[in-house]
Length: 263
Image (cartoon, rainbow, N blue to C red; front, side, top):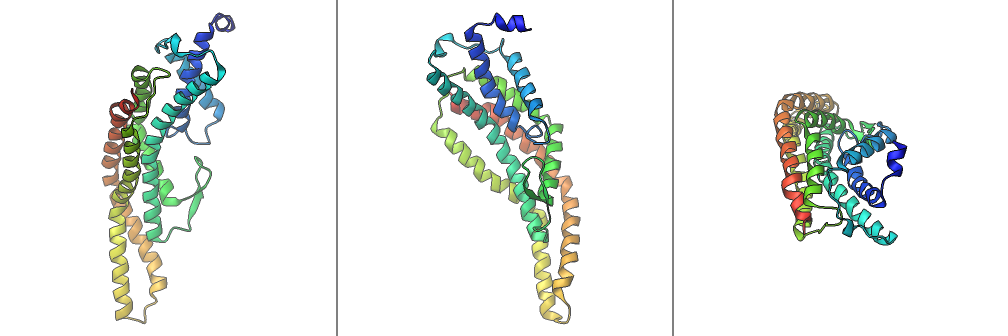
């Protein structure tokens, strides 16, 4: 292997570096792999392996490889941007799922109950962590990670290294994704939140009708019990929604996002 590397030309090393610049943000930010519990050496090794696999498949025009270090650095930054755009578009969807858990947890009175998320190492509400784990299972079940690799390979077919062009539609697409973050959160949290709102209204009416009842003490176990009950009943509705959501996100990576970066 060392002898093979020594025989490589400068153009081959430059092509490998450009490929790694696009592959690394996708693999480091891909769901499941973006967890900090996975060693960085494992991610780096997987990135290098994927880069070496793609090297003979990706056609890099030697005329696009500058000899000046500054120009090559700009070319690396452009490749890094492509990978970040692809990875960020999927992470926005998972952010919406986690936000729905925060909405439900706040409504149930669990806003103070949080655990340390191993992916971000920050305090995360329990329900956000629970819904995130459920969504990851569905993501792997529907082969969502395959869409990542398909989008990665398709990006080299549509966007050769150094040929990125950020169109105006790309910014609109990301604005739409940010808007869909709140739509996804509301759709997931709506069943439980609606029941809890009616529960709070009923408790308010009961407090006016029977002032002797300590509503403050009574409402905590009642709200938690009803919230967990309807959350369990809603899981069956979440699974097909997550499946359709991830499939639409994967198709958007290949057929919508990549064409918006072509010249």
